[in-house]
Length: 196
Length: 55
Image (tube, rainbow over all chains, first blue to last red; front, side):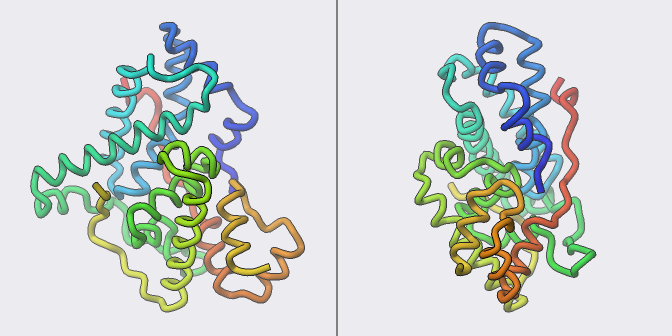
């Protein structure tokens, strides 16, 4: 499956150029970037937090932060790893904020809005539900790779890691998913956490 | 080709990686990989917010 934004990465607008124009106070470039990147950032948050409302809050937060630190982007460097590094920070801060507010209360607040899903055609669990069973670091890597369709290199940059380490985490995630599917031990967690 | 090779293909390719005869041959024999790929590649896309929601 090839998403629209993945196609944008290879043949669409030059997001690095748009970012450079945004740095030079080009409001049209800023608007274009928001429209191009928001869908995949929303998936990044929703895929790991489960709550669409919470994902929308984090989406707003990430654009505010990008605006504040836009001068730190180096023109010509790949943009997506820079953006996702900020998105990770927003996600961790959101998790800590939620922890401070009280885990019991917030657990009710962030109950997923969609029912525990199954792929209706083949009776398999939904990808998002299955991935929720993974440890945080594996879930993050798999979400970036398969939901956001970042390359191995982009994930490595965004997570301050190496391509080899990303491959290893993805492999372990796939092994775990195979095991869950084979043993039919999949159960949907009530809440998805974030590693500190 | 092994399950690990399939993992490598899945991690490296943004789209459906089953394009080579070797991968297809493995999937014909391996139920676990077939099931995993069904979950990963046959999911629906969640709705995305409009850019105007940020205003």
